[in-house]
View 1: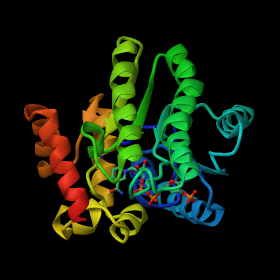
View 2: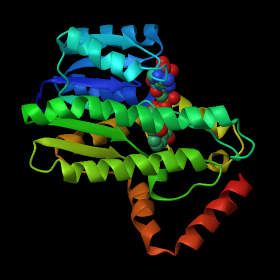
View 3: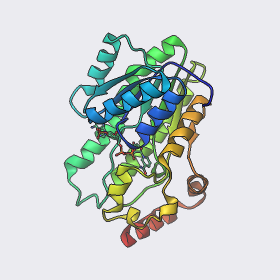
Length: 265
Ligand SMILES: NC(=O)c1ccc[n+]([C@@H]2O[C@H](COP(=O)([O-])OP(=O)(O)OC[C@H]3O[C@@H](n4cnc5c(N)ncnc54)[C@H](OP(=O)(O)O)[C@@H]3O)[C@@H](O)[C@H]2O)c1
């Protein structure tokens, strides 16, 4: 196991997928954990496994983060439980594939609330304490789609562009405070979210298996980058190539290609 680190990490969306693996990697690195998601059974099972395997403390906070006041209530409950957050992992997120004008509006607005508003509010509620204590890490899960428009994932891609921009700005604002912010930008990763998206109309239907990354690799690279104080991490060589080359092409070409892929899907 790599060197032990320590402190307490709050991981949202820890009941499955990338969040579950981030929690696991952090437990291996010696962190205590506070885990959030809606599915209490999945959270409790993970907590039991991690506490037994890594001798760490794991508290579960089953919550729907979309309920009114949930982020505020979560922060208050953690404070009441005497849990100081050294790492915040803003991972909980949803996607919705399809034509914007055909998808239900309430689902699109809910996506923005979870991917953008909840992430922003949780960051605000915990970053002040980190700055006061002179140390902290915030790992925001963005996406490869943060770098470009993605027809059929229009609102999702826009929400993830927000996460990348917000994380980069914040990392500069916080320079010298001891608090570091990292945007983890995975490409397609094998989780429930992608399995569902692959069965919907849109560009993901055509995604070949070799392009779909491993959840554990993505989580490990995110945690390592955050520990190292890196601001942006894109797991996978092909994904890094895509992220860095998007800016070299005219925007009209990038969005036209995206539209073509989306119509083919
Ligand atoms: N998979 C990919 O290809 C991919 C690529 C780039 C970025 N990402 C990003 O990675 C993050 C994790 O995605 P994933 O693929 O691991 O998805 P996932 O397997 O569907 O997991 C999503 C997690 O978010 C939680 N969640 C969803 N709605 C919630 C709510 N209202 N309140 C609290 N928790 C909620 C879910 O738990 P409950 O259902 O128990 O609430 C689950 O733990 C997301 O931000 C996603 O946008 C994923």
